[in-house]
Image (cartoon, rainbow, N blue to C red):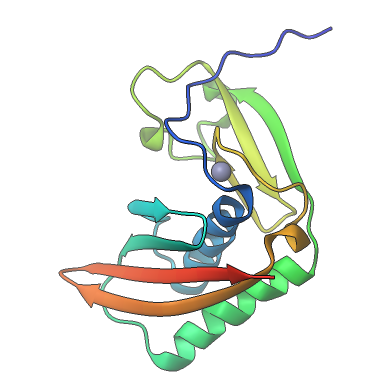
Length: 154
Ligand SMILES: [Zn+2]
């Protein structure tokens, strides 16, 4: 048997559907606007807020389009797959600067179908239909930061 790699401790346990929605929203923002993944997050069971480094507010139709695309990924019921690699093997695929200080040499890759992949030690659903329906409650723009507040309904 292969030895289980020792991973960084994740500092909090998130609600897997919410946390997986966070991955899908990040990928959607990167794909639609060419921005980076979120710069800060407040992920709770019923409501989450993600902040992006962003040049402007989102228009209403853009908010609807983000919501539509996230729900499209959810309804496609993509598998969420965990794999492992060394930092060297994935240095050209991921921004290793995002890893915490003292991160282990072995990293954990979380893939949402072929829609998203990122390094993450958190808890996720097994396939995207388990997320529920994604709804953006509000957005706010201030000082170069776009905040997206969202909820999940079943
Ligand atoms: Zn994750």
